[in-house]
Length: 384
Image (tube, rainbow, N blue to C red):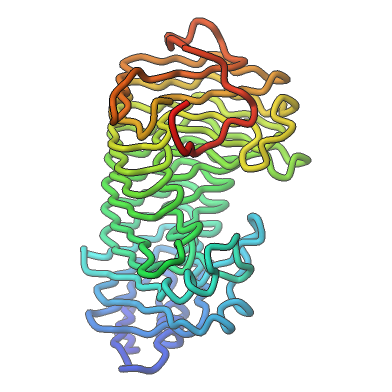
């Protein structure tokens, strides 16, 4: 690492661990400075915890490869509090830009993690690739991810974050699925803009979690994913979760589980003022979906987490089976203010689409064709 005035320039060391040089650059140029990670191949063998940045411009043109020492990462990845998750790289502070110039590549050696996990549930210590933590006024652009270890990105306790022109892909090359390789998750954050992403991830493409507000998502293409999702929320039930003012628009979902949906546990809080607009999809298992008891499918009518003022506008495409929408709202807190317009969903193998609805307002504009039971699954295995 070479420091010239307020500029720290990092060059790759070869096959050695480059995390120390990168951390040194942040230490010396993280306040009122610039950090330039030039082209080349970098090895990241240790966690990078970079907090309290101020007025820092970061340029990345190289390939950063996180090594596959699973034992190290499990023991040392940095806690991010939410659901016992942890991260390999945590960035926080004020007035931060991270420019990838369309050249930056983050390679997580994820295949080692996918095979180790063997299709199981979340493995403790399996790290998120990049986390924004207590960050304010952040701009991220032009970065590519391949084979992340876990989630690609997580934004927590942050505000005024813009993330544009990102390319993400988590694809397993073995018999074992990736499991929980979300593209983006927010939590306890506000004022976020996401534009111009392409994501292949096998799980939620964009997931808005508890206590998130004022979020705008535009022009995102999701392959093999959960597309646009609110949730999960309401877990633990003792802690209320709130989501307000979210707009998803101009979204494409291809061969995905869902397209525009909300998932909660039987908890407390609310989801309010969310719009799904101009969502186009091909071969989606169940495009529109609401569950107040996701995964357990029990105590579904006991949840008091209120879902209201949700709009689906211009939702078009093909469903894998004949159920276009499965909406079960809690009997203890029925959905209100749901609005549907421009809904054109056709089963890909022909027939008439079904719209199943329970405990929601009658003036929604959706022609419900039947009731939706509480234990209605997120993904179907055939026609209803």
